[in-house]
Amino acid sequence: MPREAEPSKNEREFVLAALQENIRLDGRALDAYRNIELSFGDEHGVADVQLGKTRVLARISSSLTVPFPDRKFDGIFTITTELTPIASPAFEVGRPNEQEVILSRILEKAIRRSRAIDTESLCIVAGQKCWSVRADIHVLDFDGGLIDACCLATMAALYHFRRPDVSVDGERVTIHTMAERVPLPLSILHSPVCITSSFFGNGAVTVLDATAKEEHVREAELIVTVNDFEVCQVAKHGGKPIDPALVMKSFQVAVGKAREMNKLIRVKLAEDASARGVQELTAENDRGEPPVG
Image 1 (tube, rainbow, N blue to C red):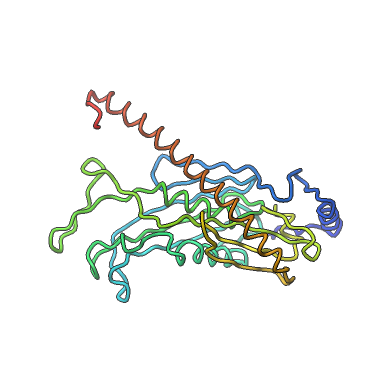
Image 2 (image 1 turned 45 degrees about the horizontal axis):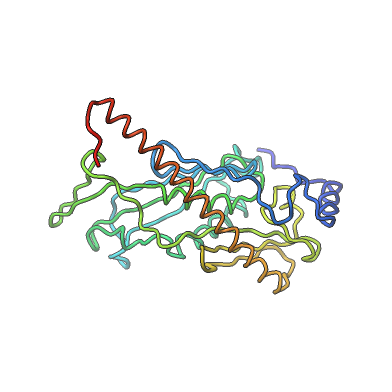
């Protein structure tokens, strides 16, 4: 599989010269994100995020398993990422590149290790039965901003997901169908979102949501994971140092952008819930059954 061609010297110089004049190739302001489109699938736990030309699909699933011996009162939550040539020729099946490794590590720290999900709520019988929740992230198209899009898609899918209700009688665990009991949402403690800043010209220019071309020519990047009220993690990549004043400014910008993204998740969840309520009511009427509630 041929690797994706890097920008030529002329392209690099053109992009950098434009940024020095506060001009981006797509006409955005330096601190502006591309248009974000968030939609949900027919099944609970499927979220599709489009950030410009970058597109990510996140799917949440659950199954019963045995908890880890040293975490008897906790369930299990795992995140897997898949970058294939369908998204970009730069990605190869079975050969994770540096970008995929960084993506997996950032999402792991941003969501799982920050305890965004209350894993204790996934425990059914201590030391014997628990829920194992898995987030599968598929990158369908790539044009920069991958970490931000993947984090947003994962959190949206986690909020949208519903697991079956269970009942426990001694050591017997019964999983109830949707017809028997209403599925339950996950217990989410906070909503972390990744905001990536890219730096050019020894820190003279700072850009949010860099495209693939801009990512090729940047000198350093700062990934800030924040929720609505605090910074959860910070990761810096690239060889150039970043002035502390720029780091603090990036924190402030990240908090504002994260609030906008979390608001988008809430709005889209409400729209989806409303649409599903209408569909369920119509289905009940078609069967001639009175709606519940």
